[in-house]
Image (cartoon, rainbow, N blue to C red; front, side, top):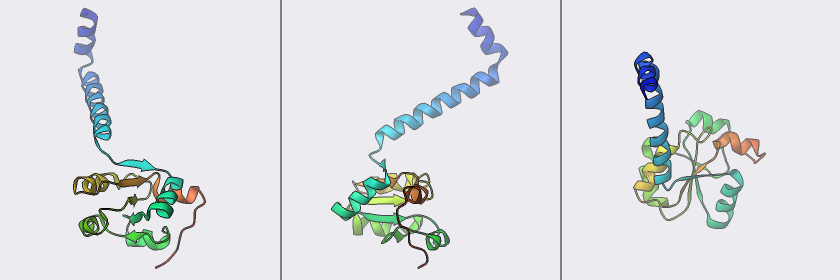
Length: 139
């Protein structure tokens, strides 16, 4: 025990950094378990589109959307997502980003606002293209 205390005393900054990182990992893990938003693969998204008429919402910029987007996806900015909540709250909603990272907060906000079936497209448009699924350019 004395050796541990001596190590902590000699390496205070290192111990603080490791402690903060440990708490951050625990917080992120618990937060992920408590949310009902989950990532889905491209094939799961295709199934939701075909069987359950899922709404695909592309959260990327208009320029990125024009460079290539999933057919019938809606390009809606994160700031105007509230309009979609009422319109599509009873249908499955798949949020699309570049790689699936940026849409996580939006998905949580939509879930809290009453959309019970919100999904994130794993790896976003990048993953969709990697799976050789079609994209539309322009518009």
